[in-house]
Structure formats: C-alpha cells, structure tokens
Length: 444
Image 1 (cartoon, helix red, strand yellow):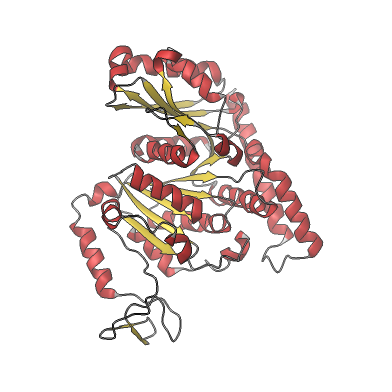
Image 2: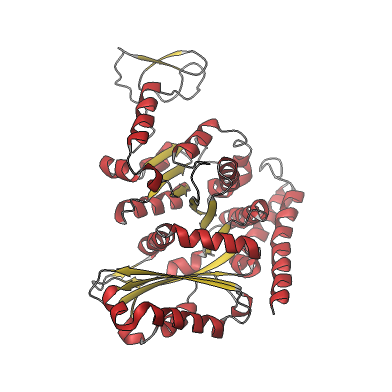
C-alpha cells in the first residue's frame, strides 16, 4: 500500500472541493489550505486506504517488522532495501524534511510501493535549519506524524513487534526527531523492540554536522537508557572504506552493503527481539556492528577464521575485553551446510566467542540457509558493550570546535540551545561508559 504526499498541481479540476480542519473550502488537489495553511486531508482517499489495509490478507505478518527511514540517508537506505531486496515481511515509513527530499526517490514504481507498504511523510522543516535544536522545538506535537506512525502498522495488539529506525545522525532532522519518534512508538506499543540503526558522519564532514551527530547520539542514549532500546552505530570513516565482492565478482560499496545488513536484521525479527530482551536485562545499549560479505568458506576453512578476519574491520571500534553480548546472523549456502552442518558452525562460533570475549555473558546465533551453488558466506555480528568514548571519538574535535564557535559568537538563542544543555549531553556519554565499566567489573 502507498500513501504519498502529492505535489501541488496548478492544473486542477474545479469540479470538486475539499475542506481543511478549520472548515475553509479549497480546490481539490492542493496540499495545504489557501486560507490558514493547515494540511488538507482527502477523507474519501483516506477511507479507501484504510479499507485496502484491512483487506490485506497478510496484515499481521507484514506488521511484525517496521522499517523507518529518517532524513536523506535513512530514506535512501530504506528505498534501496525495499526495492532491491524485496521483503514481504516489512512495512516502511520514510520521513523527509521537505517534499524535495522525498522527490529524490520519485523513480520508485507504484506497484512496488503498494506491495511493500511504503509510506512517505514530509515534516515540512526548512532546509536552511542546520542544528537539531532548532528543529526539535517545532516537533512538540505533530498530529500528522503521530498518525503516520500508527498508520505504518505500529499497534499495541501486535506482540513481538520490532521497529528499526535508520538515519545519519549528522543530519539535523535525524538528531532532532529520533528521540521523539522512539517515545511515540513506546506510547503506542510498550512491548515493541526499537532498534536505532544509525550512521555517523566522517571526519571530513563539517564541524556543524559532527556537532549534530554528537548531540544526536547522546540524546538517544539519554532518552532511552531506561527502556533498553538497541543503538547500532556505523562510523562514517568505516563506511567510506566498506567494500564487498558480489557472487559475480562485482565490487560493492556501503550503499549496497548497508541495506543488506539491514535486511539481515529486519528479516529475522525473532532473533532481534531476543537480543533486545537480553540487552535490556544487561543494560547494554550501544552495539558495534561487524559485517563481512561473500567470504569463501573453502578459502577460510572455518567460521572462526572468517570471524577473526571480520573483527579487524568493525564498523565501529570496540574492545574485546568489554563485549558482554554477542549476536551473529550468518547466511550460509545450503550446499555448505550439507558438508559441515549447522552444529559445526554453532560450535565454531561459541568457541570463537569464548576465546575472544573474556567477559561475555550471552550470545545468540541465527543461521540463514540460502539456495546457492557458491561457498560464499555473509556474517553480521552485533557486539554489545562497545564504549561510547571510542565510538564518538572521531566527532569530538568537530563538536568542540562548533561549541566554541557558539560560545564565542554568543549564538545560544539563535540556535535555541544552552550551555547547560550541552553539559548534560556530554555527561550522558561519560555516565554511560562509567556504568558500563561497573557492569564489566561485576562480570569479571
């Protein structure tokens, strides 16, 4: 099903009209009321969409996994996921800051949108706004956004529902709105597992972008530390270097590989729900991802060698001595499984965990058999216990420089932020790592 916000059409038919919530009469086809600028809703079309939703025979199945893309990076990743890697078990909501953001993806076919349940919503925030703090003040109550969060399928009557939010924290929209969306999801369905699949900017990006990312990461930790949500962080510098080789020998970059990582997470909701519960019990929020694509089992000889190779190229830094929770999703051709068995893979994985992670408390393994004639194996590791100090280190200098700029120019009011706000965000990072260190000492 697709519900899209159409662009203004000046060549309208004047045979029908639509009323805004304040009762002003408007020509059909407009997006906003010509009198008061309130959003216009075609109730007949809305009713038809709701009826179509309930006529969908796979309604319960398609709403177990919800993927939310926020901002440009998140939108692009979700569209790549939904169109190039077909997932009948997921619904999608894409949140953009403007119509122009969403129109960047206008080449998506209508029938694909309908099959995959893509919803798009324009938050109508100015592209000139460059700090999360300016956007946040306008998001206190957004009834339309609340409606779309419900409409995409988040429902209190659905058990073991998983919502995955994807975005680049350097974008001010993502840093501003992610905590709000997380809280709204929790208010609708308290049993929902929420995973923030976030990318950080690279050190080549501007200080402003790095400042947004630092604040965004801290705000997510600060607002969600009690609920046990999972924060998977991908560093920008690592994404720029990310390379994989396809089965055909083609070189793949992060634009292809990140959606494939997201596919492994969102296709196996049961595993992720289990991870979420364990993470909550252990009070671990930040995870470092490790992903290897297309490793030859024949060349590496066993899973332990593949895991060793992968661990040297994490998408966020981690210390082996601090990891207390490990999850692996391994995609294995059926012909390889026939030769080595799932039990062999499980034994190798457990043996590798014991060797590499001295304070490990829990681990999960999910093997995904695939019909393939090759011996190529994909492995996604999510390692809980990564320290924020290490994850956030590439952003620290940019954050400090932009903070000094705000101080020197006395721009606190212009950016709608205070020095006390920033001190609290900085303390959140410090306190999280202190608590993690205490947790590690109890597990030694």
